Image 1 (cartoon, rainbow, N blue to C red):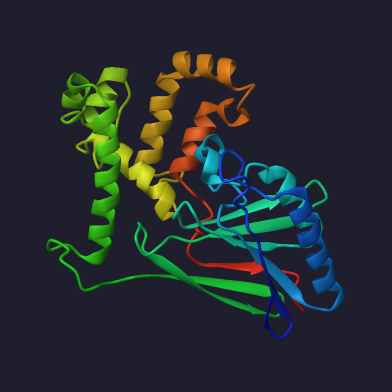
Image 2 (cartoon, rainbow, N blue to C red):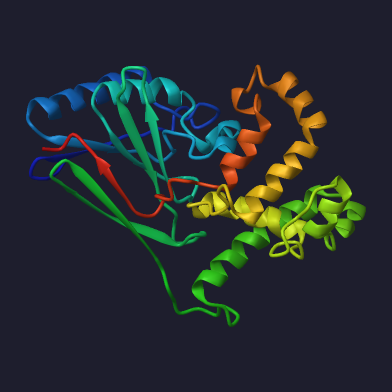
Length: 286
């Protein structure tokens, strides 16, 4: 689709068989690669869009079937090496900018955006010019609804956290739930013999767990190296090595992301790049 002078959009249906396979069939891919070639030959910049994410935007998404295309590595390599460097996706309602670089050194960036019924309630403005795609994100500051005295941001977080808490209540036995309801990070540290920074020691472990899940979807995960939460998690993981090393040996071969539990967990709580909202990407556009 020609959406502006010199710019084309490649819209792709990735429903697959509407069951286990969520991706592009080979004949679809042949057509898509031909369209990319035609765009380049005619001097047009071309980018794409799909419903399901092309790339897993967080390590945990490697373990969730519909969090990325079924054959994502194969398709990411084909797209990037054909000269497609930018794709917009959705489905997971997350705010994320994710790169993938092929062995040939070609990079494709998956820009996934939150939605107006989720957390964050976000949208983006993208400006394409002079070999760059400038991405700026915005969130809804207010809307006409009974938010129970909360700000819009507080309301969206409350709705997300309520969903996670419901799931936890369904899974956890009542005795475990009762313990967690009053279990602080300080108590956790004492139990496993590590010190927690005073700035976070009074936080409930359950609330922290819910927040860490929410942060994956909100983007720009804040707990990077040097923050008290990162250091506490790092200490916790070291104490759990007798258990995590067993998991690594048993599950690492089938799921490479589980071959190093420390890296797996720590990479989910902190994002050093901090560009899930605003980013400037180099593209092939003239």
